[in-house]
Image (cartoon, rainbow, N blue to C red):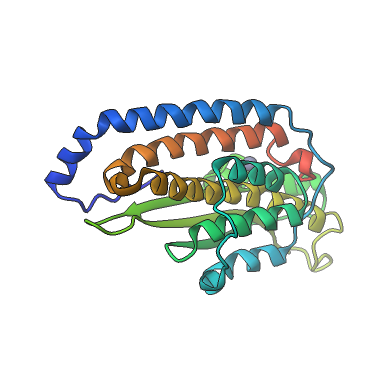
Length: 263
Ligand SMILES: [Zn+2]
């Protein structure tokens, strides 16, 4: 869900209508570009399992602190650059993901804030069977269908003659192994690799959210002076692209199973 913030006046909305035709032309052109990019992704070869670490959560949470130290990209990236980085970042190694992350943060520096929240829910048991049974009972209460869930919520805000301000909030829901038996105070040996692979998968969804907001910034810049009145159309278009990318990512990875998130 995306809250669209429209602090604009009635006259802004009238201008929006008057520019609708131009917006449609813009979106149609970009949608064409996306079709080519999707065909590209279908040819993608999945690489062997990559694993993340709990440190990655801290890295995500630290983003806000260092966002003002991000250097400008040497050359302005194109949409194709953003998309190539996304493919590598979702399916490749940790370093591929970090490179994509840095690229998006470079595009968004100064005018976008990302807040990441980590939401744990408890799972119990010492065998895969018991943990699966525990999770099956809990997941409906937590409101998820899979082991993890990443929610990217972004919004934009503008006022007359000001650059559009973008905000991204990401929440990552993850299982947390919880001891119930004094004989087993620590997680079973297989748990850390499962957890890390799942975290890597969920951070791939978070990366798609960053990609979407970076894409929005690029398109707003391309729209130039009309950006604030075109923002609604650009936002809706990017949102639908992001939804498709999340579905494709889950299909390609079987919700993280092919990345090692199998119990
Ligand atoms: Zn997923």
